[in-house]
Length: 149
Image (cartoon, rainbow, N blue to C red; front, side):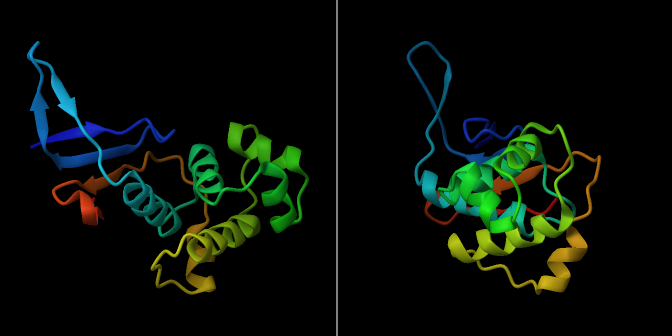
């Protein structure tokens, strides 16, 4: 069992713990990630339920998982598509009211079991300069789950 930094999703803060590791003929570790859709759903849940504002990369991850273009997301939050691009590149802060709508829409569209009211989500949309790790338990790839911080 090992930990794997899962950067293939476009985020640099996701680590899958307790993964099965195979060793190839050259003695190198080989990681296999089954059920990528299930894994991405758990990552999305961690982002939507996070206790602080989402990062630009997390916004892009959610938008991509919801299969939305920047223009479609802009329409949802009543902004210009260029604004969404600036948010995703970290050029300007994500509007906190728009973030509430984005989180709630992601929970609905992705079928996330997030038991938070709109008021609770709004309290979590405060930007934070702290690094937030997303830690996933990979022991059962059929049922990935978040690990406590």
